[in-house]
Structure formats: structure tokens, C-alpha cells
Image (cartoon, rainbow, N blue to C red; front, side, top):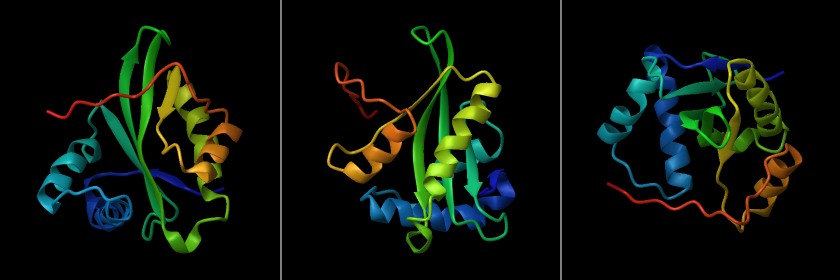
Length: 148
């Protein structure tokens, strides 16, 4: 079983390079100061989300960020997988499946009623994985975003 460790402020030096690599890979433009501003509240225990390091605490191989909200439709606390990254050198070994299979169970035990994620429509490999893990598309809905 791949370890999931709740990230804390002292993990920033191990987390930041992983986040930077994910952002470069997915064309997210964000400078280091803004990235630090985005990560620190979650590392300090904000109730709005959590970051888990994947793998050994001293040398993580990835991370996952969950943001929390409240849903009337799902009658309680819900979560959104904001980012999931696994180093390219260890992909294809079932680590993502393991994380995405274990995390919903653990979060349900903490009262989470629904977990959401978004995936590019053309990313058939990821869509297949997520659907196998019972993340189902809601074709009648589209995620819309307005930046502030």
C-alpha cells in the first residue's frame, strides 16, 4: 500500500518541486510566490482543504490536493480533487489507482458525501481509470469557471 501522509508546513520544500513539475506539465502558469500563497494555508490546517504526500515522507513521489465544500444536493461535505500528480518515472504502476481507491474510503469515514474531479475529455487513459474507480461523468452538467 502506497503511503499517504497529510502534508504540513515543514513539507513545503518537498512539495513545491512536485507542484512546480505538475504545473509545467499541465501548462499552469503560476509564479513561486503565488504557489506558496496557495499552498501554505492548506499545509497549516485550513478547513478548506488538505494536501497529502504520496509515498515516503522524506522522498514523496507525488501529491494530491483535496478542496472541501458543502453540497445541498449530496447532503453534506463534499470534496474536489484539485490536483493529483505522480512523478513520471513511477507512473503506470497502479499508484494512482491505489490512491484514488483508498482516499474516498478514508474521506467517507470523515463524513465526506461526494468527491468530484475534472479530467480533460481527450484524456481517455485517465477517464478509464476514474470510471473504473466509480467516478462517473455527469453529462448533463458542465464545470464552468470564472476567475476573479
